[in-house]
Image (cartoon, rainbow over all chains, first blue to last red; front, side):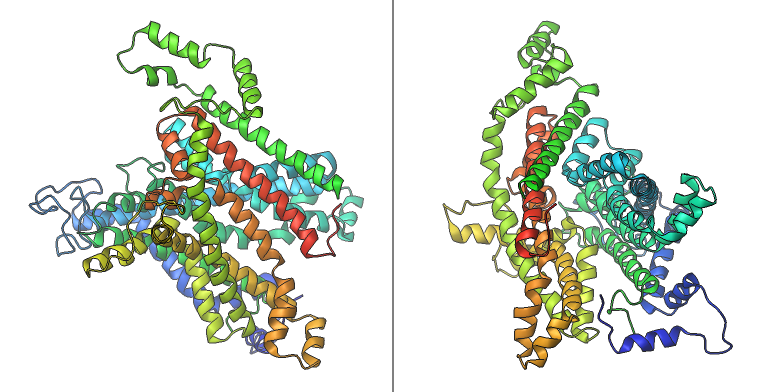
Length: 315
Length: 319
């Protein structure tokens, strides 16, 4: 199925223990591979940095003495009422209302990471449960659930998200809910496919024969064998969710305005990029760094869990 | 084959039906008052009641929905609350913009995506391959609007400052009116979409081509003494492109219903912009129209993709 490049064997050998021979489970091996992957380390570091920034956003605000909503109409704006550039007082400059960009970028990290992680968790749990149930029970249950996933996947989702938000008003909960609702089916479909084939294996029959109920078979016998692809999908779903949130906020339909979001800041900066390059630059960079880091990490996790799967594995 | 087609068509109709119900419920169960919106703030209750009556909003919900479906089946999508123009006419007037945007971008992202994918697959783990990976990851990580902003900043604003006005910052000129202007206005939006979407194609092409190149018949072709490029392009790429065609169908289906973000960033008067405007104006008939049209494109594209499987790969049996 795959092309085994010459370097492949070397990668495997490098991951093998050098000293005493000891048994290692597949998870341990994957973890070891991940720890040795510079891309994984680098992207994980970036993610941790942003997570710390998000948690410590109030501390950042306190340290520079500017709140995320404080408008410095005198010092934070030029006499013409335009944003001022990076300086000792405002390290990353100010926005169109004279607010400190550094503080707002830090607060924006909270929304992006919160939405990314919360939506991914919701979507993953829903996708795994629905996929397992559909694949395990088969028959009518599978028919209905699989069709339902098809329907969700063929919704014009951005359009629908916009319509939903416009009716209910923008809020954090709606944003997370909308993203989760349009993401779970992709995971569900893959889990269902895998479950369909795993269900036919003999150890499942063995489990039935000793009297295991459906819940036990699904979650104790089948689920562990699905974890690897689910982890990879979930890691790659986080940046998608973050981009989705930024897009909604950019269109003015994400989290409501006084709250700092990267997408909202970029939207505000549209009218000012010609005179204030820092205004779109910093939220844009932050957004790009986080999504890039999650995508890189997702790739590395995939390589670590399935080293033969992608010959591009860093060798 | 016929059974398969009937099955797909039924599923497609099911999707459209569910979408129509979902949109209908979304806007009718939630408290909002289009009549008051139309009649204005100072309208008397009588005026509002009159508007409600004219729009048919005073009838029972099921009856309204029934009437709505009946009219849609007859090609009548109603009239905009906002501009009173027929929804069908609004949709048709916006369609050429979105079609121009989607198809032009598709050409770009196919060339770029497949090109990068092939280059990477021919020399896995090489510098080219790594550069390809960077290209893919950047494309996957960039929100569409960010790419659009970057292009506007560098290719419009910086060039403009330098005294070169190659591209306008936005707007649209019909192809029939001014072909050169059409390209000029659409080039930046095309690149924007292509940068974001090409990443998926290059990843797909790369993994699919690598898999194909490892197969026995490729070894046979090489051992016959065929040139490497003939092996890669004639024998390998042809069968490696099946997933690319699938993805193309899915993406085009999704885009043709409206390219909301790109149209918004570049001020293109397409279906996506219409959808966004109608949502902001709470213009229910137009919202329903755009959502239905968007779903229709997706459904049709999915059916075409399934059919193309059978055409491209004779091994696929349509059950």
